[in-house]
Length: 583
Image 1: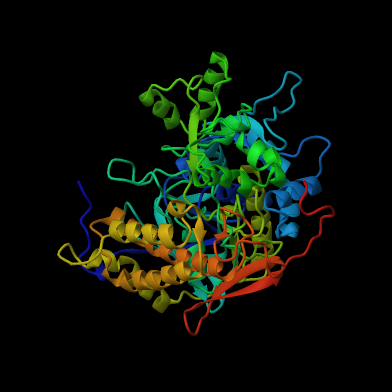
Image 2: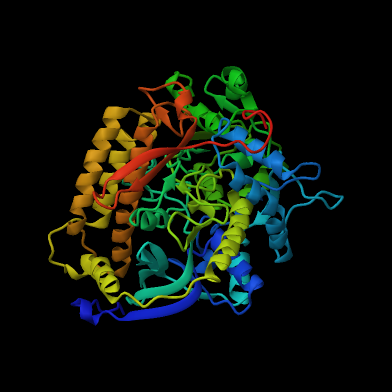
């Protein structure tokens, strides 16, 4: 029986929870944050606020077939920083953050193995590498393993509670607020420190696979990571960094499956319709197979523009046994891709797998979009820390690096906790947020307004066409960005017309509100960087070359007085020796 919806705000129960450390988002980084907190101090009260269910939530929910960063014998953390720096065209990156992550990385992966993650090994017992830094795993159970450990150590988990805002005491963060998707309660979490680890932002742009007959969320990135972790900070004037460095990946066409599994794991070349090995023939001057990640991701789209598409990953050299192993690997990460191939009756030893570019994502574990943080991972809001996809400045963290960052953020939070106490609860702030949160639901079924889906689709089409989406081959210019900003403001003004039919619809309403706030900041960043530094990830048709004046970080903050987004720069500092552009 469906839960009876409230008729007014007074019917909605408010539950207040006090804790020492609140973790918003129980994904990879969030689980490691909780485990580290209880390891340091078993008496520490650690609480996880999770939108879904912790056993299968976040970017690793469906599993993984590899850990993309693990430092092999003979290499150093500094070597990993050099490689990471080279993969984003020499930076700029926060080398201090990247180095601290690299020093923790291997231990985090070793922890996973100790908890039961099967890691593929060679006959001599060493980890089996499929590239320079990534190791193969049987990772279908990756997320349940992390979740079980977090619960085992004593973290208190509130599943299916949607975060909607930070709880503030002046300039300081003292918790978070949200609502229960199942029970309809309004939750107020009071905490001495908060770690945001909610994942990145998917669904800002229209996916080329979205149509009337396809899944609305047929994307590469977890579609339920909507940028809430960024949005709650943006609304409280947190400083954000590098939001213009979007993540665009080469994916299997029409299904958005991973391509590295084939190209790296099975040494399969990327080819165009003429059979040319794209990277070797047309992009050798940019590094070929060793070109930065954004070049490799953008190359298939450039082939389409040059009249040499479609593009493929060439699987025709694979043996029947290798095809079987490849499908097993996909069952560890993208199991429905195996069904997709079967539904087409495709023999990949005869017909190569077609590839295409994904819609753009904001994902700080891959690129470096997110909060500007210090070495302890505290944001510019005192008491608010960031880990994993939400912590900016340090790209190429992936699973192991986000796990390591969860540990580092917890250590920083515990240091902070030692000198603070909980203030009195601000009942006025709580009441205002409760009214805002439930407004779409209380407008009633007869309200003539806008559904979350309608607003989301308008936003996605706007971003796709004017802010450099797939349909525009990731290109944009000043005038298009101005158009996008104007119409994003229009959509934000129409949030008052959003209505929700039930609690799940209410979640959808707040997800589109969060996406709009992130999209606005992203568009300002794209506009401010008047150059093209990362083709595909950040392509300006009106500024097609690199401008040395922008060899810096682009930052932003919402102005408290005007409510407008203001962009500015911070300098880049190289602390790891070596050629910036070579691994």
